[in-house]
Length: 70
Image 1 (spheres, rainbow, N blue to C red):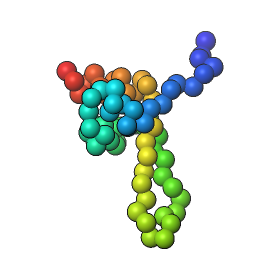
Image 2: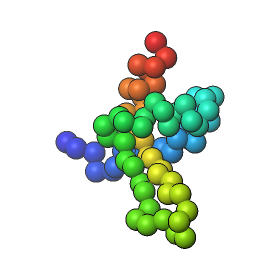
Image 3: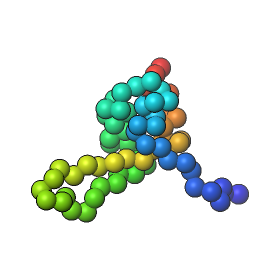
């Protein structure tokens, strides 16, 4: 039977706070990991820099954390 509820996703800030790491470290760890959602605005406003946000599924977060903290 499949789970009817979606897997929780976390922001880089949330994981950084849980793991006592810097947000930039979490972003580096997950920047190219399959399964991570990348949310980016369609167009920058007034030439402003676009900022890509990520959402990390719980299973991916657990796997990468275990690999990185061995």
